[in-house]
Length: 360
Ligand SMILES: NC(=O)c1ccc[n+]([C@@H]2O[C@H](COP(=O)([O-])OP(=O)(O)OC[C@H]3O[C@@H](n4cnc5c(N)ncnc54)[C@H](O)[C@@H]3O)[C@@H](O)[C@H]2O)c1
Image 1 (cartoon, helix red, strand yellow):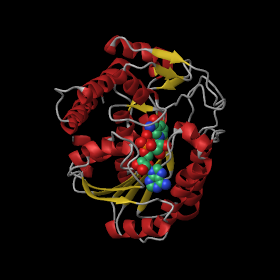
Image 2 (image 1 turned 90 degrees about the vertical axis):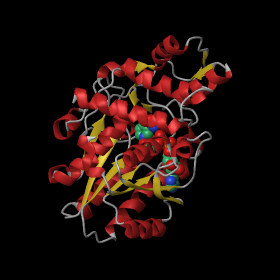
Image 3 (image 1 turned 90 degrees about the horizontal axis):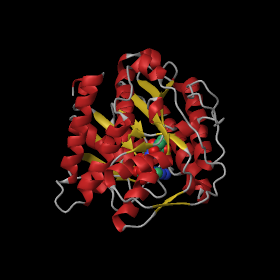
Image 4 (image 1 turned 30 degrees about the vertical axis):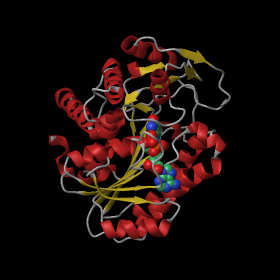
């Protein structure tokens, strides 16, 4: 792919490479000819997109907790990366209520450990660092207007708060230590909920839907009227990769945060999304239950004009195309006659890349 030619033969560290987004990012970067190194504490799910696709993808996978700052620093020093994508995090809101302390350690202190490790390494060549936070970093004011990058940060539930804390740490490190760094360039990426094949996380709508559908069980829906900016995982990853690359060439965006959200039209309610899936799959059963998480955000929208202006990034898939990508991936996975999942996933990356080529 022309726009990503800079990744060929580059050394890339992906933290959280065993997760949903990290496993897709690893596959894509490997496909582009990059040398991919992964850091994660474990494989979280079974099945796992990482396990399915990990063969011959990684130069090396390291398994440890990013609480261990010394190990993190030693490994980064050894690899001498050209790019780092930091995705490692406890990424589930519900789990953050059950495990608030470890959520803060992974998400806030983990980010601190990465930045502090980098502060203590003398880079002799450029390195782009893309820090993945979340749309939930914003203080949710339940407003209809999309959040812009300068809006207030904050969050009530431990997950959102841990991501907002990570952002404060990042800002402090940029201002205090990296502002005039000749080699390290930093960008912050805020995307909303993403969907795509290969996600089997707990308490996420799409994985729950396919798990329930496979077993002919009803899907339990907690917040039917919650509106989310649904976006395919490849759209957000495309944003992270464009940002990583642009940090190399444009010093002006060093230290900036960017929203990577879908167009307003794809902000639809959970129940409407399920009904759209039902048109593709037929006979989905669902059951609505009252949510106990009173602080789970009901409405979150991102304004992504800045990413368009500086990175020329925008979402390219229409909502029905996003759903088609998702349904086809799971259909192929669960089908007895499906093609090899890695091959199918690469086909989706190629198809998506062609769409970018046409619509950019
Ligand atoms: N998936 C979404 O819809 C979404 C939306 C907004 C932001 N994000 C953010 O994107 C990133 C990736 O999300 P995901 O959906 O792939 O998450 P995921 O839960 O699928 O994967 C998380 C990854 O982080 C690793 N990890 C967690 N804690 C760790 C620790 N202490 N030490 C080392 N590794 C650790 C896990 O092993 C795994 O590889 C996260 O930062 C998440 O907050 C995700």
